[in-house]
Length: 261
Image 1 (spheres, rainbow, N blue to C red):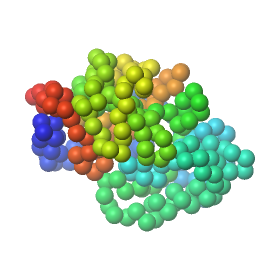
Image 2 (cartoon, helix red, strand yellow):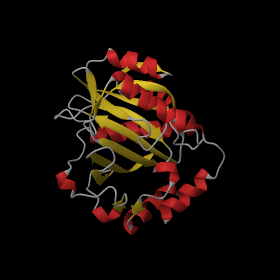
Image 3 (cartoon, rainbow, N blue to C red):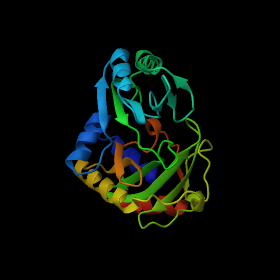
Image 4 (cartoon, rainbow, N blue to C red):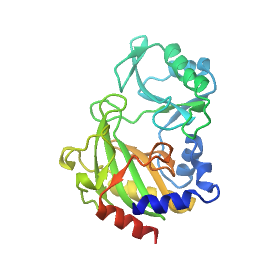
């Protein structure tokens, strides 16, 4: 495939400075320096006691996430529910101490050293929500050499299951066969999942980040609500551990290969 041939050649080069911005805190700092909105940060903690203490002082929806990690490792969006906190993904309720212990367990047992291992400190960050109070859709913007190639939007149904739609940089819906994220992410007609409200702002922000880092390939994640869009994170990996989980149709693959030059 054209895209992955170019991508693998790039990743075989020496360590690129874009990785310095991959940790969540470093990515937030870069976004803020470029004038891109970021969710409010309620606090940081290295241990479960600190996480539980910060959680107890938050009234709205928030998300627990490790400073490093991917594939939602250690990530949990929550909202206060009586004396406990309810997961916005699964509906499960637990105490602040219970959720904090679970997050700590991710770091304690996950010492594989892989790039998607969950690593402290823990962020307690504002959770951007949709009109119905659920966690906002994931918006991923993929850029090649500073220019956006395509935009992805996915909506979760539970922790991992989700459906998605994709668009070109110009806002045209990509046919389902052009981007396939595997059977775990069943595609839907883009008419069922509207184009992001802050579509152009997401593209402009992603291209600013991509050009600032100088990365040949970059994925920049966003969330949005009615008021604004918000930076989520950045990564030079198209999918978990660089595995080729995204399959492209011939037309899009050829177009992206041409973007590499």
